[in-house]
Structures are given as C-alpha cells and as structure tokens.
Amino acid sequence: MISRREIPDVDVDAAVYGISVAAQIANLHPQTLRQYDRLGLVSPSRTQGRTRLYSLRDIARLKEVSELTAEGVNLAGIQRIMQLEEENLRLRRRIDELTSRSSATAVVVWRPQRRTR
Image (cartoon, rainbow, N blue to C red; front, side, top):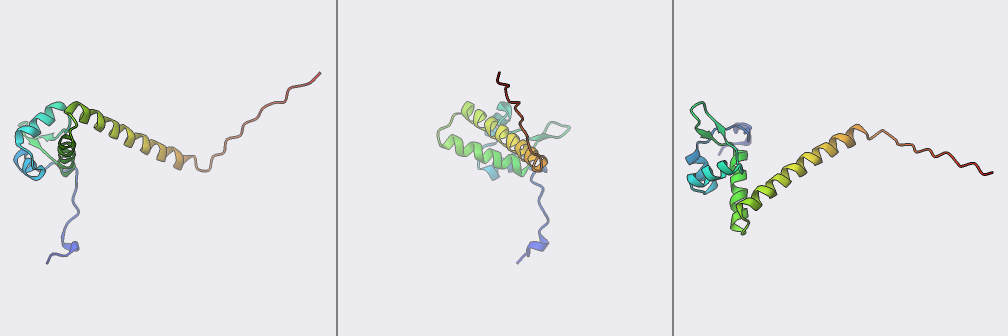
C-alpha cells in the first residue's frame, strides 16, 4: 500500500494531459473537447506545435460543463454561468482583501448642527 507521504503534491494547473487522455478522464469525446475550446468553455495550454495540453483544473471544468449539459443547460447558458462564477470568485477575493485591510479602520461621520435664529 502506498502511503500519503509517498505521493507527491499535485499541481492542478500543470498542463500535462493530451486531448485523448483528458477526454478519457472527463468521459467525453475528443471532438467535444475541441468544441468546448473553440467556444472558450475551457482553454487548455498549447505546445509550440499547437497541441492542446489539459490540466486537472481544465478536466474538472470539462466535467462541470458535461454535468450542466446533462441537466439541460445549453452551451450559451453554460458560458454565462461560468462567467458569473468567475466574477463572483473575483469579487469575493476583492471583498476578502478589503475586509482584511480595513479591519482596524473606523469611519466617523460628522454633521454640523444648524444654527437657529
């Protein structure tokens, strides 16, 4: 049995899987991966010879697209869903950044009183 210490940490962004292997892992046809690439649903890395190389993150995204299509969402809808998910993630990171930076900051509002005659 292999212990956890013997398994190296995996870089989920390392583009190491060719299209046939990525398609097999994602349980999709290679032509489907090409279509998703053309539509911008997944953007694999490219070698100098223009060969697509997929990372584990890309493969997870392919599986997500596959699940959404199985649920009846069309590709345009999937594009929009993924755009919104990316924007949501970006905004959450920004909120975290701002709250961590301003946790010791206080806001003071001062209003002068009107003079009565």
